[in-house]
Length: 157
Image (cartoon, rainbow, N blue to C red; front, side):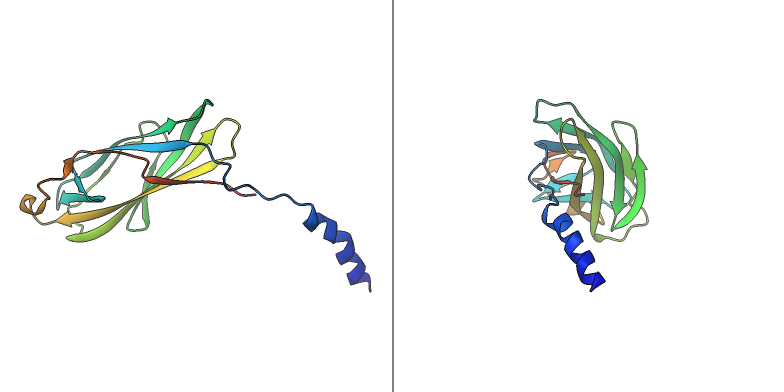
């Protein structure tokens, strides 16, 4: 009987608890500048042995509030390979020992915008390592700047 009374006392805590609104994220984009790659149809192509370089990661803040990025962490095929704490968050990925074929390059970062909850941005890129420059797409964009290729979500508490 005492257990039942404790549950009745705890019931208002569950009824009146607030939920985080997942739509309460700032209107921001990530801008990522690459070099050493060619992009076609949302796939990054690079010749085996040539590095993939991210020249910069920056926040495009479409709100009237102040905002910044936190630490940017990089992942290659789901394995964390490093982090950058200082803007412009550059990173280089060597492809010498990577097999020819498909890979996944991911970056994630905290996004801090005034008057919004702490948010996180994740950008994933399909990467195809080719054996020679002859296999690069002729009509691809070289050293692209990719904007709005990330998922932004708020931290729920």
